Image 1 (cartoon, helix red, strand yellow):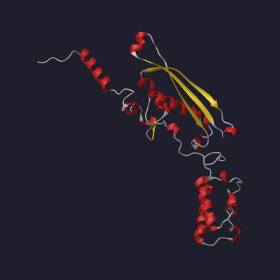
Image 2 (cartoon, one colour):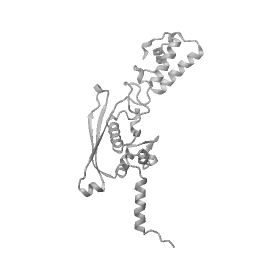
Image 3 (cartoon, rainbow, N blue to C red):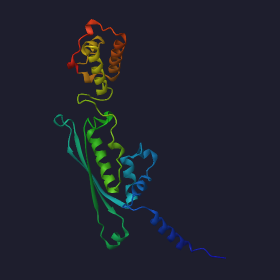
Image 4 (tube, rainbow, N blue to C red):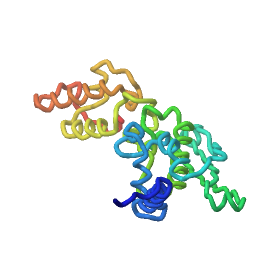
Length: 242
């Protein structure tokens, strides 16, 4: 009857096999390997969150974070379109057995930078450009250190950006709505300002009109098109209504 390997020897062999199967940072499979450590709630539409990358960083890289610093390079002001620029620096020390034994303790430094303003930030976060820029900068630094390929952090993606510099937040008229109104009003020879006034909408700046009001304006234009008869007080397209 054949005898099995001693437990210690088998554990060593298993460990060597696991190390052989684990991709290195230079392998094409490395990115998928890193992302496999994330939980589902640490991804948004497949993109890793900065929180998730921060959690797995030391484990995946087999290192210890020595220092993480944030530098605000540009603060929001009217002169720079309320833009914030932030640089994030990450210093870490690899837990390499060879380096530790030789007493080298080499540290590595990576940085990431991000700038945020109304035109590249989701509307709901546009009033917090420094905080958004800090998170994006950290995500970029972590991605760079992890050497992820063709991956962006979830916080770097903006889906609903502000459509106009005069817009103050969410729930305002969109550029698509304005363009639709202009095209239809020009086709029907309708004065949009008069139409808006007839609806008791008092906003002087078109881009401050509420989204729901804009929907109603567009709806009224569509009804006038269907009716085919335009009231006299609404006739007369003026391209300067915007």
